Amino acid sequence: MAKLHVTTTINGDPVEFLCEPHHTMLDVLRGSLGLTGSKEGCGSGDCGACSVTLDGRLVCSCLMLAAEAEGHQIRTIEGMAEGEMLHPLQQKFLEMAALQCGICTPGMLVAAKALLEHNQEPTETEVRYWLAGNLCRCTGYDKIVRAVLETAAEMRGAAR
Amino acid sequence: MTDIRYLAPRTLDEAVGAFAAAAGAARILAGGTDLLVQMKAGTVSPGLIVDIKKIAEMTTIEETADGGFCIGAAVSGAVLGEHPRFGKVWPGVLEAVNLIGSTQVQGRATAGGNLCNGSPAGDSVPAMIAAGAIVTVQGPKGRRQMSVEAVPAGPGRTNFAPGEILVAFTLPPRPKGSGDAYLRMIPRTEMDIAVVGCGVSLTLEKGICTAARVALGAVAPTVLLVEAAAKALVGTKLDAADLDTAAAACSASCRPIDDKRGTIAYRTKVAGVLLKRTAAIAADRAGKV
Ligand SMILES: Cc1cc2nc3c(=O)[nH]c(=O)nc-3n(C[C@H](O)[C@H](O)[C@H](O)COP(=O)(O)OP(=O)(O)OC[C@H]3O[C@@H](n4cnc5c(N)ncnc54)[C@H](O)[C@@H]3O)c2cc1C
Ligand code: FES
Ligand code: FES
Image 1 (cartoon, rainbow over the protein chains, first blue to last red):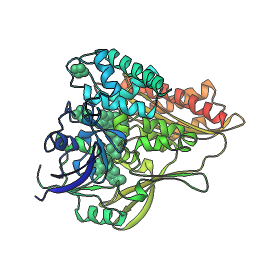
Image 2: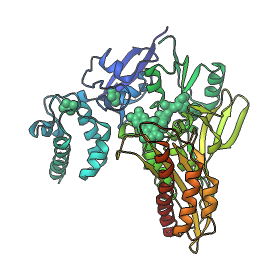
Image 3: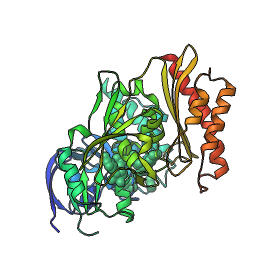
Image 4: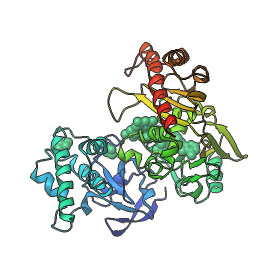
């Protein structure tokens, strides 16, 4: 079976890869491209551990065919920090202990970043609804929600 | 998984041609939030996947000159939610579409996929039926239109002819004093499948209901248009007794299943309760227009 040749952009860099038509974006990120930050919790759209953005929009990479990346812009957790400089959300998750085992964390961070790009002043309810597709087995969510709210407040302060 | 082909044609004609030529072995890919899950579970294994997201007509939302809307079959819930006018004219349809899944799922899932997937619990379907939406489908024999309620044939099945693709939804222009709403009953607040879903669209003139459509989801093998409930509302002031009559008509139309989400008795009762709540929201919106 002929493989598909896909040309795309991942975290701002041009990337080409070969994939089978049934491969998901998550398969290719973790497999061929070695970008293992995105996790596979369920493979069925329920847990959000595989969250990436596609042209700026939050999606589950397990529910997207790799072939669909052709000509689009993908961003993953690997593109969140700038070199050694953590994104404020990453920094705040560490400071406020918003993770335990860490499996959900890349997806949570990618999703939270997409939220703050879309809404700089979310309420607690808005944060909880936005992150409803990101499951966490460890933290009980509270620390995550607080870390997102706190980061949003600091980022607004810094922008002022 | 053996030999799958993937195509992302730029035109509808190409898509219809490839889809029809594969004679049943092909699947249309819109947002993929049902299809990819089904492929992974092994319940479908298509020989050809036709991605419709590169077809311009399928990805646009158009407000027509008469005040109606045309929504392409590949428009995601998130994109529909960002339209400056759609949610003002059809708040009930929009809230139903936006109830589908998480933020991530909204980024991909379409009302077209929700309808074509054929689930009796698809959230956008009752709202679209209540709205009186029409679908345009195109197949090897050309184009035709059908009402949304004529599409589902049973769980997982549609009344499309072989090779037909859903192209777009058309929603009619709104008379003054109209409102719509959709409510679903779920045990959680988010991320669950409807136990019952109810869509209502109505028009009020000087406090009298002059037109109504009611649809119920998850209470029968297909989403139902409940004409008896609509009839019970038209000509009334939507007083408590009128809503009781319409609620009884909703309960009477139910042919639900018993499952872990709800018993037959529970679904039947909740259908009536939801009708009253949904109609109240639709009426409130109609009064404000
Ligand atoms: C985590 C999660 C949560 C969910 N929550 C909900 C929920 O709350 N409510 C709900 O109703 N659903 C829910 N769903 C199911 C799903 O997201 C919806 O049914 C969605 O609307 C499907 O749209 P899609 O564009 O992703 O469809 P796809 O998966 O692309 O397609 C679905 C089916 O329809 C066919 N199809 C699609 N477009 C066309 C077309 N234009 N012409 C002909 N056939 C077509 C496909 O071949 C496929 O068989 C959920 C799914 C997930 C993964
Ligand atoms: S792995 Fe994609 S949502 Fe769980
Ligand atoms: S930290 Fe373990 S799943 Fe969230």
